[in-house]
Length: 94
Image 1 (cartoon, rainbow, N blue to C red):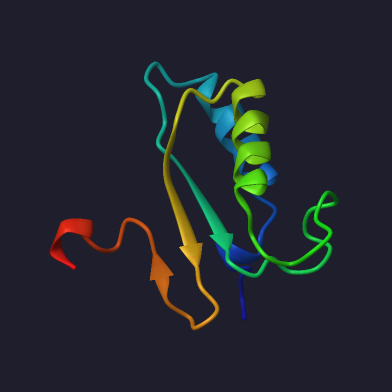
Image 2: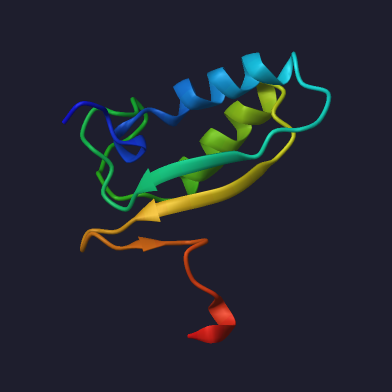
């Protein structure tokens, strides 16, 4: 493809861009993290297995906090079957 999917990117690079932009914005920015349920091998150096865990989210959240990000608005997760869970459906509507 012509681009790299957000789900295949190291989210620390996205956090770095948001952190740089935040310095020039008077209000907070809505940061969205995109994560796969099966994380590609080699994407994060701390990963020993490919499954996403709450530890991964915690590491990224702490990284964002240390970069000056005030909030993470959405965490979108791409599942193995190609579906996306998170902000796409209403929990009470299911």
